[in-house]
Image (cartoon, rainbow, N blue to C red):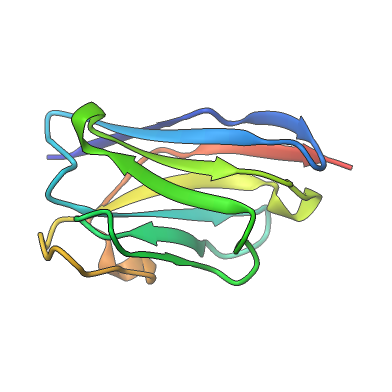
Length: 127
């Protein structure tokens, strides 16, 4: 069982920055491809960013390209989402997710491709 825990959310003004972290208890994340998704009130969960198990490949939704950056530090067993130039429309609960297929270069952008999810962390961007 993989338990993912997100942290780093909060309230920030438009144009500000936050860094979200995702760590795991009980398992190493080094063999998993990881992703970040978000869900705003009244909306479906949507893809934000993903990173391959190797860390070499990444993918982003068009709405966040150039502003959000996904990265991983296998030594710290953590995945991060650096969020810059935040906009009010980025307000949502952010979830990290793990795919356990252990394919080095694979990147997954659909929620059904992930096997484990964290509880989420709230990000609120005020205008």
